[in-house]
Length: 118
Image (tube, rainbow, N blue to C red; front, top):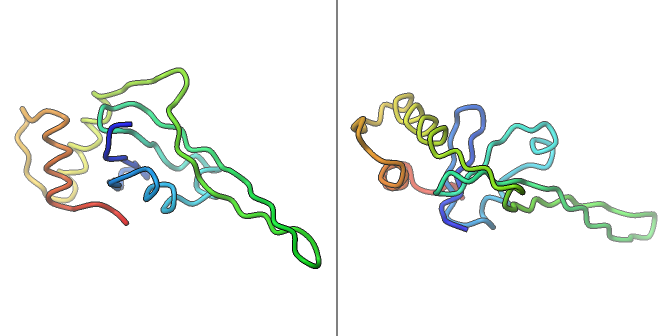
């Protein structure tokens, strides 16, 4: 999967260097509410799924929920939408980018300017 992982939370963009960082950051309750759009660098839509792990304790079970990010089946690529989303985000944070910039250069500029979310 092409990095970074890009998460849209209602116009607030987070960039993750790898899938594991994104999976640890995302909240199961927000996934259930369908709050996030998740993409890879190429504009492929990714699908978060909730994994439930059950552990037995003296007085019952404890269920821990974890997130796993997988490719969307069938593949949905929306480079144009991702570009517009990131371009608007740049405008909102007052980051100047030329209109003729391509998606890969725009992502690289965002990584340089705002860095990765941990």
